[in-house]
Image (cartoon, rainbow, N blue to C red; front, side):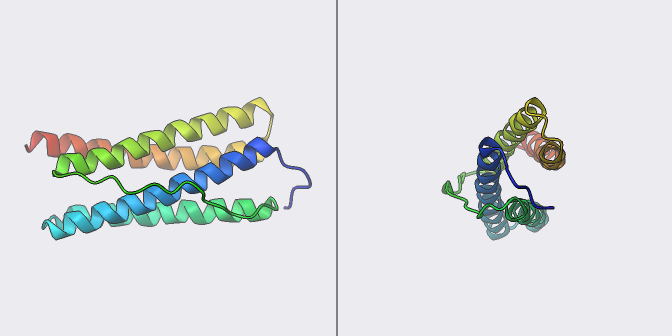
Length: 148
């Protein structure tokens, strides 16, 4: 289904979503590699799995943008945030996940406001999945803070 006219702000949300997902991919891959280098292979695999899920989100956003007639453009890629300790690494990912959850909540709210059902459902699904990622990071953070 191709839209003839799409709200400019919804397109902005999609572009920002792509940037955030690309940031998350970079962050998870960096933390995955660092934890592997430090001998935390199980944790490294967890972060790698999360990166793959974020790649799936980016692919879906790109697909959505193309269906809407927009050229995908992730314009705000930030450097990965690294930490000295395992709790700092987990906290860096947790912070990004919290930012993404808040962003998707805002996008859903906007789509509700303009009565854009299709994009609301699209953003709601991403929100649900990001809340799950945030939950995984919360669990890891609690487990590794207790282990200190």
